[in-house]
Amino acid sequence: MFKYFPTNYVWNLSVNLSIEMGARMGEIEEMCAPLQDAAKAPDAAGTQAFRETWIHMADKLVSLADEDEARGRLISAGDKLLRAANYMITAERLLAHGSEGRVSLYQQFLACFEKGLTLSGSACRRVEIPYEGAHLSALYVPAEGVEGPAPLLVQVNGLDSTKEMKFLVGLPAWLAKRGVASLIVDQPGTGEALRLQGLTARFDSEHWASRVVDWLEGRADVDPKRIGMEGVSLGGYYCPRAVAFEPRFACGVVWGANHDWRDVQKKRLAREGNFPVPHYWSHVMWVWGAKDMDEFMQIAENVHLNGILDRIRVPFLVTHGEKDSQIPLQWAHATYDQLVNSPKRELKIFDERTGGVQHSSFDNSANAGAYIADWVAETLGGRIVAEQPK
Image (cartoon, rainbow, N blue to C red; front, side, top):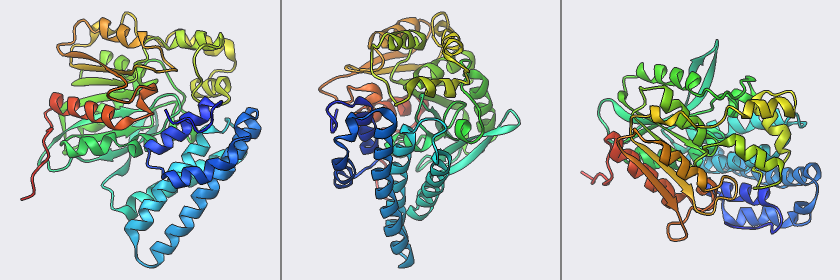
């Protein structure tokens, strides 16, 4: 793990995530060098300082992109805008719920990301899935070199990630190269669903996951028999739960097992384990729609996988970082051990040799992501050998 701030795990996590999303080291240095003292400050003051330097860099990149666009250099402009969006969401993610300007910053981020996709020539497109009289927003990335319906992996967020973050880390691109399409979803409690529509998280993830499968079955470019699901971090709970109760999923993957999130909350109350965001307790109450800590802890009692996983009868991959400092390694073993009816279950621990030892491999996602992409391609009928030029 790259530890720019020796005493601030939350900020280090954010910096590492940004690097995995494509940050440039010179820009990281420019943004973080003035923040050494602020990293030791209380949440509100420190977070404001973090926001100012990161947004200053994002604004500079947007200005440079405007110059590129004016000269017709659209690919360069798009690349800069996607990097600016990276820095915007990194800053937004650290702000407390209700912070002044947070919603407008998030909307600015969405517009910047969308324009970056278009100008850079990305095949990724935003889509909307009908849900509860509203919609779930998602990013659709088509498979490369596939004629006819393709296999697809639905990808869902953790507690505080967004669909754009997951796209920028790279799994959809790695899958596309292997002939597998992607649908990255802002499920209830995350991204647009939470911030713009007020859709809070729910423990019965199959409720929204089934609506996603319904929508995918209506697409001519998706093979309905080859739809899998992957979840990162808290998605390591949402995904197995959804696959257990939605039999149309053809496989499942967790990138960071999260077998018993209620236990993790109890440990965090006792100050065990690292928090992923500042203002942690107000953040989780916002995500889950709880009015106070008592109600949140009651909700959390449902967020575990015990007594559920024996329902899964499709291939399932459990991955975890050996030195995960947020979710103990024991929960990866628990998830794997309870997949007793999966015809192809696998437990992969990313260690010092492979890299990706931290929580959901945020310290080094390349090798871990490639392992997941290969497994998915093998399982859903993609490819693991590059197409040769004709």
